[in-house]
Length: 73
Image 1: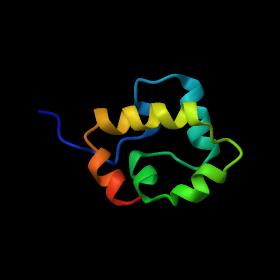
Image 2 (image 1 turned 90 degrees about the vertical axis):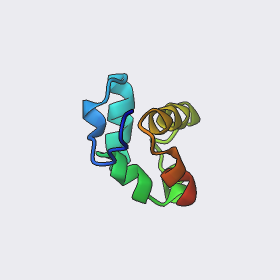
Image 3 (image 1 turned 120 degrees about the vertical axis):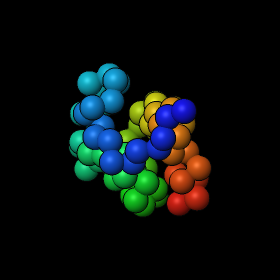
Image 4 (image 1 turned 135 degrees about the vertical axis):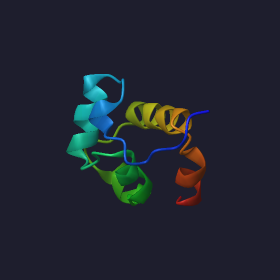
């Protein structure tokens, strides 16, 4: 069973480079950055899109971090 690792760098995930570029535009470089960010400010960022957010949620679920993310909402 995979253990949750919030220190993973976004650039090390197997995802579309466009996803990584958008994350970096929003100052998100690790999964921990996602867990600590203010969700409202994230959604107000000009680089934010809901298609990016859906992929982010899939990644968090895959990385076993969804419970932590939801607690921080």
